[in-house]
Length: 125
Image (cartoon, rainbow, N blue to C red):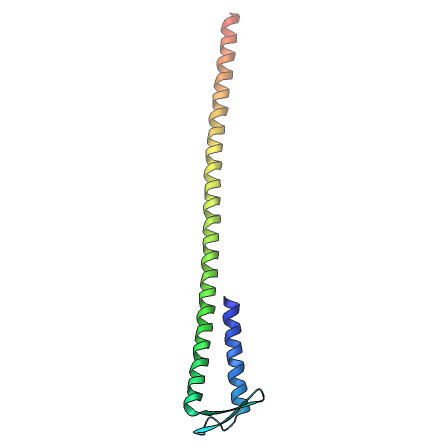
């Protein structure tokens, strides 16, 4: 969307510049002949104004497309960073739970070994 908007702006600007360079005095005359890409057209000042309005509208549309494309890109990047942060937090929580459970199991094994050793000692007496 961003690239399409940029191409639209560049094309409109190029077309406007081609008209201006090809016709030095036609914009000040009340009516005249405009030559564009080898074709001659008789236009009035009103038609010239409408052509300028259309060119301005296309430039505005191109700018809107660029801004919306950049906004969508920023939102996607922000959502991706948020997901990565949430996944990392979840992994840290799971690692803490795993470590705590490992310590509990190790303590339980030590207690069972001590109890088994005590049972073996009392049985020999």
